[in-house]
Image (cartoon, rainbow, N blue to C red; front, side, top):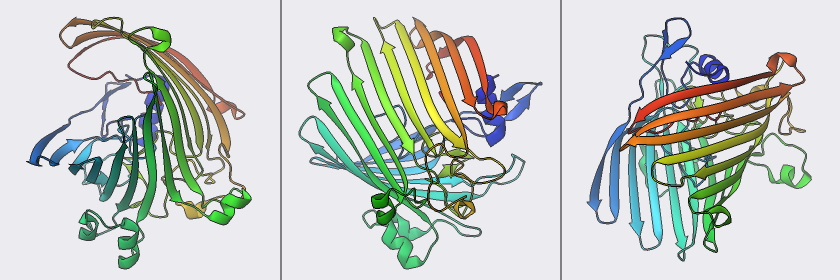
Length: 379
């Protein structure tokens, strides 16, 4: 039984956040599987191959605007190649096309092809450049040309005349002095240079970004870490005119859980005075826009972007603007090796000019977990 916001999100998107299919349990409960696993092979000292069913996360932040683990796991093949200061990743995933409701029938597939080249600059800095493509279609399988490990996907898409959705961009991370980690990401779904220059809110400037800093051993206190992070995605980012090409899997975004048309700030404190105790405090401030009167304002990446409300004048938060605040405090104690008892307090609120969209809730919880990650669900 989830909190009201998470339960509402689950029933709206017809999928468990971070997982997938579910069934009803009694009147207010939900029942679902969460299973992940893969095999890893060292083909050569420089080349590793992984195959299985899992989630993936790219970047150094709490969120990822490139590829996040906040959606369901999926079948994948991953090849990592490390030579000198270079690390090259090829990832191929089978995804589920969006669906209106879960039923006992075979869900349609689409595919993600992803590659990233990382370069270490000395011992403290790393930059990475990535490209990804979501492809598929009715009665169309995986396009074998995307198996090419080095070609640009945009070139393949152009040559075969496909309507696939290509994203590209870069990420970076670096250590400043000894205790500070800075990181960031930039994602280009589509852009128009003239629109950027004129700052006219052209819908084609579908851009997402991230900047963050992590302070290790805050104020000299060993075991206390702080993270401050900003995330943003312009309207219509990650969307497409085809349901087989939007940046989603199992009715969930492959990047940020808010989709697009949002701006978010995160503050996180993590304290571990010894190996048995853990304290976590997560806070989120977010502004985002949701659709109103059946019109597409760019936050819902599942909608056809050809149904957009306007070509220019698009700004973050357009539509029904919602201001969201969440704060979570977790206290964990390890009873035995990897046997944890968790206690938490979660406050969640939404404010909007549309009173029907506003809500607030305080939740308390106590749990036990064995050799498993804690489910924070900061959505």
